[in-house]
Length: 552
Image (cartoon, rainbow, N blue to C red; front, side):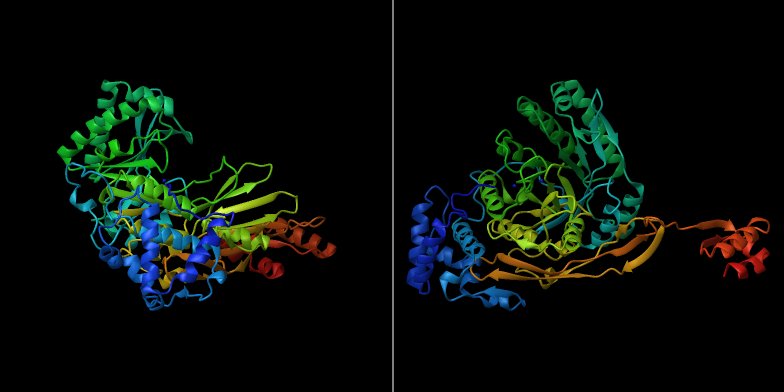
């Protein structure tokens, strides 16, 4: 479901040497003022605070002057006295924080005139909205929804699509999910998502054809309104992808028509948009939709070379770029909770967080926190010679992204997707703006998955579920997490499959004992010295107690 900034981490090290020189001089108020003054001169194209008094009152500046604001929460803070000992991550984080502190909280150039957002969807001035995307194609999404529903302010289920030659509306409400939500948290807004997807492929040409036909648009709009009203949903989340550039005007027309129709029914439009695609007119769509959702991930994706999925500098740079056009009160940032495994010579595999960390454990690879991108990754070579390069997102990356968005008072954050994430993500979602890293990030909960290992029909419980653990380091100036260490990865039930052994055979006899055949089988097994397993039925066992005794 996001960024572009003129100052960012430089892997060549040139900027780091300059920073080290500056850092030696920081320590007095006069030096700090000089640093801010120089930064202002270098960033004259950005909106800046009206006075140094305003800068001094900025929450991030206050936190930089008071390291105890993080230490009070039991978090390790970087306070190295020797600038030369600072890590690349902490230096990069401080550069980003210095730049961010010069940006006013609401930098958009205009106030967008729109009808009021329906009451249930409105956020709080004190904290961001916590939103989750639910998908019905992942069995883990439902148990995850049940576990985290208390943490959610909205649910966005993927229950609608436009597909086929006429781009008909296809609906697929999961009654089990709907009944659970209504029984457990009846007042939570449900804003189902519609996509132009069929057979796991985006249909850009089909969508373009629909959008170009005013009569077809109106017919589809009537279908959508009827569906939302019948189910008493609060609005519609629109995720149209691979939209041809020539169709953008028609899409704007469709959404304008939708906005007028929705206003009569108190329904909201939530529009999902690429994080950084200049073919999308962000400001124009912001005037139509109630909320814009920016997809802040896939910096590198399954068709690209391997790399960070949402590098912190990339994320902040693109977010800054977007927020020049968008109203923070109507902007939601979608954060990722998944990973990719780039395999040399093979297709890239998408991984859940759990699959990623279990892969690290099974391959005995060390998970590294990349100092340049602030994303975790690891690599290993399989026995067959294939190299795996794995990057993923976790609770720490979520905190850093939210910490960056909080500088703008973004309306909310939406997790893509339920069932794939690091469980510790929920310790940072929906928190007060500017909150420090919670202690909950240190503990990584388990899932309901079962990890099967080995081959064969004989099953053995090898491991019980166990929580994972991490430590992390927070930069005292930026408030950003600049390092993390996995002390233990969370593990689900581990079931070993046994019996697939070369030259050996596991023999089982089912549904007995039988008075005719079981005695003969037992005689042969005894004569040959062979052991076997018998799966018996209760009524047969009760009728043949002597045979049960022989089997034992």
